[in-house]
Image 1 (cartoon, rainbow, N blue to C red):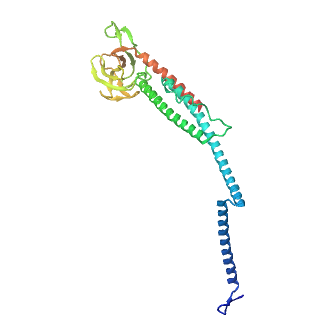
Image 2: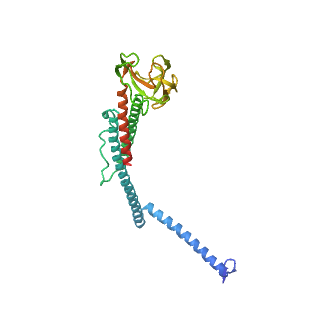
Image 3: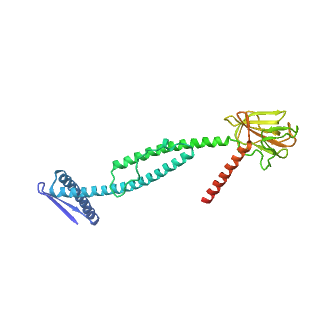
Length: 318
């Protein structure tokens, strides 16, 4: 293809020879330029019409904007409904947690009225009506406050229950010699050596020499010595003026000042001191006054039964 361009002013002519490839390239380039010009012109006209409010263009812009706003509002509304439903479920769970906290506080010996958490907040969110962002924000703030207060309450309850557990561990309720038959009990009896009536201030547990003696409760060893009457003797202070005494031991495994825990092996059964046979003489003293150790051990048996029943129940629930 040959294109001839004639210049009237210069009285000259110029010829261009275009083959097939150059012709296609020229058409594509012209099309691209035309498209760019058209797009720019359309954008300029559309923007100018939108700003100045031309009748047709202004209506089209408002229609498009209205559709976008409607879609955005619908999306926001759907998300608010989902969030409101989740908040309602959270409120229901929070009420259950508060009810549980009140029951547990009673077990811990705490007055629930003193730790009431955010009373009068109402129930779950009401479904079936539109909720505003402000309402959701207020509900979230209420839940946050309730969660903080519940955490404080649970901390107090945990502390109280832990304190009670420690106190129970410090009361001598565990039998010091396992699988041993009870010999002489607490009270008045005929002394086996003098033959006269005398007060027996503890319990005797006959057992072979070397049989382990276990701490009836946790505490501190305050006495570890050889006594003319009690032989190798241990005294453990459990606090609150409560002391246990272990006498006639053949061997002692702890020293004065040691901290021991419940069920720890502290000595072995023996026949030392004023004794007519191998046994453990076990005493419980409150403010220095001998008490019947059997009352404490019976209380320990009751606790053991409760623990066994609760453990069986938990196994059945599983």
